[in-house]
Structures are given as C-alpha cells and as structure tokens.
Length: 594
Image 1 (cartoon, one colour):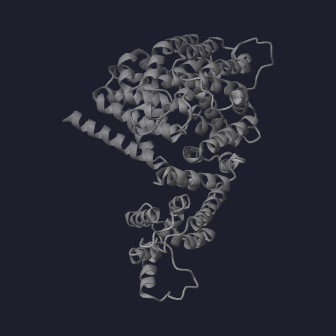
Image 2 (cartoon, one colour):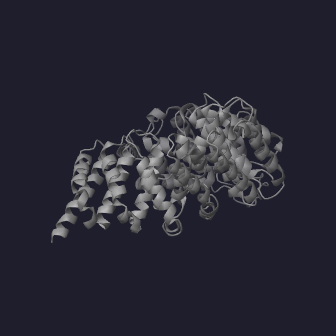
C-alpha cells in the first residue's frame, strides 16, 4: 500500500487516464500529460523512455496488485493503437508480457490457509488467485491479438514478444501457465501456419517467428511442448503450407531440442523422409518463390543435423535417389530443367554442410563433395554449371566490413581449412584445364567460380600463406573473365575481395602482374553496372597505388581518366572511394617528385 503514491506517476506517464476520468485537470494529470507530449516522438530505446519502461515493468513484475492496475489502460491502448505514442506501441509486448507473468504468478499460488486471529490479513490491493487468473488471460488475449494482427505486416512484434518471454523473471510454473495460455490464444498447436503468414507472402525473415517458437517450447509444459513440435513437423511434412518450413530449424535445433549424437527419438521420425522430399521439391520445382526455396534449404539442413544417427543413412539415400539423374550424364531420363539442376546442387550442398556441422560423418560428406567434383569433369552433366551455387550454399559470400569471413560462414573455420586441402586442389586443376582448353561457356568457368568461393571463405592468414599460388592464379584469371555486362556479380565481387585481401597483405605477385591488374580495374571501376563491383575495383586500385606507386606510373593516363569518371558516379559510396583513390594517386605523385 505504501508504494501507491510512487507507482501512480509511473502509470500516468505510461498510460493516459481514461477519457471519462473526472480528475483530468488535476496537477498530477497535467504534469503527466506534459511529459507524454514531450516523449511522443521518442523511440523505446532512448534512455529516458527505457528508464520509464524499466521502472514500470520492474514494479509490475514484483507486485501483482500494481500489474492489475495496468490492465484496463493496456487493454484500451491495445484496442486502439492509433492513440499510442510510437514508443509505447513498440513496448506494448514487453509491458503486457511482464503484466501477464506477474498475474500468472499470483494465479498459480496455492491457496493460503485461513489467517490466525492475531495475524495481519493480506493487503486488499493484492488480487485473489481467481481474479489474477482472469486478468492474466485478458492480457494474453490482447497480446495474442496484437501478434496475429501484425504478422502480415511485420515480424517485429513476434521478436518483442519472444524477447519478453526470454527475459521474464517469473518462476517455472508461472511461465508455463503464461506460455500455455498464450499458445492456445494464438491457435497453437493446431495452426502453426499462423506464425508464418508474412514469411512466404512478403519474403520476410523467419528469424523472429523461430525465436518465438523456441521461447514457447522452453516454457511450455513437456506434453504441450511435444505437441507443438509434432504439429509443426507434421504440417511441414504434409506440404500443405510451405511457410511452416520456416519453423523446422527452431523445432529441431532450438533450445531444448534433443542432441543429434544420440539415437533418442522424442519425435515420430517417420516424417523425416517425407519432410525431406517436401524440402527438395520446394528447392527444385518451377514456380516456387526464392524465399520459400531458402526456407526449404534451412529445413533440409536442420533435418540432417538433428536426425538420430541411425536415420541419417536413410535421409542421404533419399537425396541421392531424388537427384542422381541430375548429377550424371546419360541417366536414361529426360534432361532436367535448369531450375531442377540448380535445386539439386543446392540440396546436395546443404546435406554436405549438415554432415560437416554435426561431425562424425566426414566420409559421407566427402562422398557428396566428390559427386560435385565428378560432375565438373563431365561437361554435359546437368548440374555442372550450378556447382558454384552449391559452394555458395556451403560458404555464403560475405561482403561485410569485417575482414574475417567467419561471421557469415555456415561451416567452422577448421572445416573450411580442411576443404582447402581436400577439395581445392581438384577445383584448381579443373579450372586450369578449362582455361587451357579455351572453350567458351559458363560450364567451363564453374570450377574457377567454385575455387574463388572456397578461397574467399578461408581466413586471410591461411589464404595468403598456404594458398598463394591458387590465390594468384584464381584472382588474375577471374579478373580477366570479368565483363562490363553485370552478369555473375557475385563472382566479380569475390574476385575483387581476393585482390583486396592480397593487396592488404602486401602480396608481391600483385606488383609483378600490374599489367594484368591495373587495366581491368580502370576499365570496370566506371563501367560495371553493379555499384559494389565498381567500389571494389577502386579499393583495389587505391591499395595498388599505395604499395607500388613508382611501378604504376606507366598507367598514369589510364588511372587518372578512370578515377575522374568514378568521381562523378551516381552512387555516393562509390564517389567517396573514388575521391580517396584520386587523392592517393596525386599525393603519391607529389612524393615521387619530391
């Protein structure tokens, strides 16, 4: 009771009084209204707003009576969010969850024995367990309504809700009660597709929906958690809603999932092969959106990683039987479409990644990679032109600011280094053989593109120390292959990435091969249609000018013409690098004359 006067200002700052209130002109309400007006354009992450939210949430979490005081105002704001300030609309899931958990803790409290005659009764402010349960269910109904209403527009509410469940300090019984009621309000486990409505239709990220599923599974009672897991896996294996594939990694690899190195089978693994076939079909069939294809690859990878050891062989055999006609020439079947061949390469790579990630299946992973290398040698194999796509699935290109590729890699650094010893030599030989034959066509450059992807995934120290010859040949040959038509921009950006890393490490071969480096860079830095490629050319050119100023003087006219054109580039990022490159050039000339 003593905290009433302290909590009331917090409540008024958080929630304006109802329109029918009789004390709107009171000094306290006028003060609170002035503060709410000043904070109306703030975000929930600003320090003063965060301090207000933290204070209100902390009190509500510890005192069910104060949480009950928030319920009417929260319900009103949730029904008409147009009257909410932006920071309150963003913070509603957090405040609602804290309120529900606090009331749930009271609702699950065992009945207290009758007080002794001389014992002080409980404060009247504390709601009874029955009333607390009713209020908590109201709050959870509001919370579920907000989440489901916004699924088509944004996943941010799901993320905020998941975060609120993750950090709530309620005891296990209260959290289980909240998770159970919330799941029921959201139609779970009957309709898991409700969580994914915005993923398939709008190409949204599945991460927030996955995070919410993991948070629910961590809090739900065991039987309800298993029912939710099986419902998601059954829906995904049925193929009726491909968007549910987005939730498969959360079920199989999230917190509380069974370890993959045992033969324990907490799920009905009869769905395994069927789910695998659905994923393969989504990846290789015509008319399937790119976002669904990515979801299917994630599901396939999670399935192979999480399956019991004695189920792995059946899954791998299913993949091989599905796509064996795509990897070999003269299989007796009609030639597959390009989409099917590309999907086969990506599924093959996803399986190899999963085997390398889980460990203990090195020979099986090596067999999958060997099949890809053999396809490269068979120039008429349908999958041969798409082998580089397979390597990009295993080692996704990373053009971020970090100098290490590990941040985007699916494979551990040690596994990538192992591939540089087992796979890179074969790719290097195939690429050199294709270059020597001078045959035209994308299939002849597939080995080179695959080798470049593998080299980009290596740590810089390993790349410039243990793979010097492969780095030099692939970078120079790749630079020679780049055209100004913008095709295969990923390959072009990765070739330039290799040159940037080699130049930063002071590789001497760059200075020895300036004739093969400077003219292509000068040509592409202003003519290539992809801004990232133009920017990469200028970065390499600036590094070359810095390290080999005296040796690039024969290219003076070429460099000055190219950089002056790039200074007028339509993209600001490219113009900034072009100005830096031009300044480096003129400063170097001045130093050379001095």
